[in-house]
Length: 144
Ligand SMILES: [Zn+2]
Image 1 (cartoon, rainbow, N blue to C red):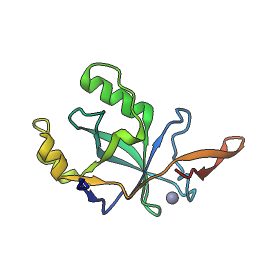
Image 2: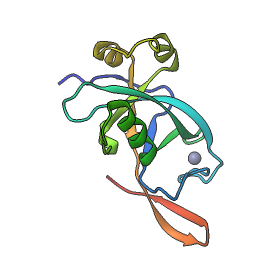
Image 3: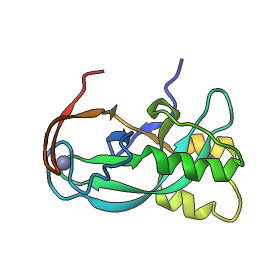
């Protein structure tokens, strides 16, 4: 099967944060301070049509790591479709360039438009806490 989507020029790495009490203002990989970035995420649940939500994410420029908080993604998606929807990292299939997204804000994007503008992540990462030192947490990557 042909791979859908180009590999992202930016945001090569992605992490869906499952920890509601951690907001990753520091990068779990290099411990630098992360920035806030609003990025249109493309979400596909099972065989349904893909949807795009413009989501505030955390971003570490040195690791090129984009972090979205799962509870916030679920909340935004659920209000869009009008029912609760749980989201796994496999459901977030990539991002749309901001310019593409702006062009389409007046109406919802068609599936073909979404796939045409889709950038996929090079790798989806997962982290779990390795040591908790009071409020300072050291994170380690999980091999998947
Ligand atoms: Zn980093």
